[in-house]
Length: 429
Ligand SMILES: Cc1cc2nc3c(=O)[nH]c(=O)nc-3n(C[C@H](O)[C@H](O)[C@H](O)COP(=O)(O)OP(=O)(O)OC[C@H]3O[C@@H](n4cnc5c(N)ncnc54)[C@H](O)[C@@H]3O)c2cc1C
Image (cartoon, helix red, strand yellow):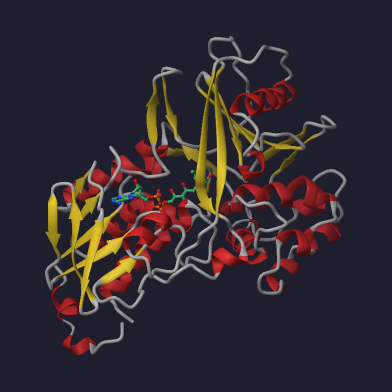
């Protein structure tokens, strides 16, 4: 911050922080502050906390669903630390090792990517993806050296490994088609997972639901540390004076920000832009479609193996997840399907599922959830517009998966951003 820190009262006496938005970034900021003994008040527009990472009861299917299937990796260090802090690490389940089963629905070919636990990737000698060469794997190093702004496709395309592993990985991890997706962001994902060996690549999903793992235990932890969450409380305006935030507007009235207080803005980027128009932020977004089929009624109980999910190559679905009574499909980078109805996507994805599980059952009842702005588009234009937590306003920081995390839009990025925002208030640069 451009000010004399010795005379900054906040550095000495920060007593309370207002956090606008209680998604993963806002919750993570509040948890980090609580660890430093500072209370927070969270203002959340929605009826519950969690933002894009939450569970809800779906009346049509009569089951509790996650708003989208979320996959975590054991190498998501910030997520694991957050879960340990809030006492919820045990609420994730995984197969106990890195194992990613795939099917090519065009050819029917099946394979499993299963990196061994150590850093040395013996599996590329002994358990390669069928049809791939050793040189295909070595080409991954090109990601690290990719020119600024280079796309994943321009750096990696053309090999069987690309078609069978790297392209699906890029589409799901970056939620952006590889012709546009930034090679540097895929490198960050590969460096944090595959290159650290199988111990960092165990796939983890919530035992019950996203809220039960990542949200509810955080709210309980925060309550124990004197922090408060107000749901159904949309902040509609922020007031600034003399380079600091002096207050903001909620449905319950005006909130004044004292000199010993600070504000963290942890809303999605388009809301942040409405509240503070001068804030740099990504302006392009990508959809994700999730389809949840109620297979319990159709007496289908597919076994997708120890991972509980499978990757699909050459189909409409990218991932299929098996949950009690439900098969769920994720279709990433779904702007390409903007003109295709949910019904058509459901029929196509069901055909992929039938190939995967070897069934000819008619399509059961399903729920389609199309999140139009699921993530920012992970391209060069977005990357250039991702702000650091400290945007030059005193006693203020921004957080969110869209800020400068060096990662694509992920839970890991959101949690890191919340920590970084808290840290920037506690230890201003
Ligand atoms: C369908 C789907 C699938 C995904 N899959 C994965 C995955 O497999 N793995 C992974 O790591 N990530 C995945 N992600 C991404 C992950 O969910 C996000 O990166 C993360 O949840 C973003 O958290 P956030 O706190 O930055 O933003 P948000 O979750 O958007 O939180 C912002 C919060 O601010 C609130 N808010 C908005 N306006 C206001 C206002 N005016 N006043 C007060 N509050 C306001 C919102 O209601 C929201 O709760 C997926 C996302 C989607 C949508």
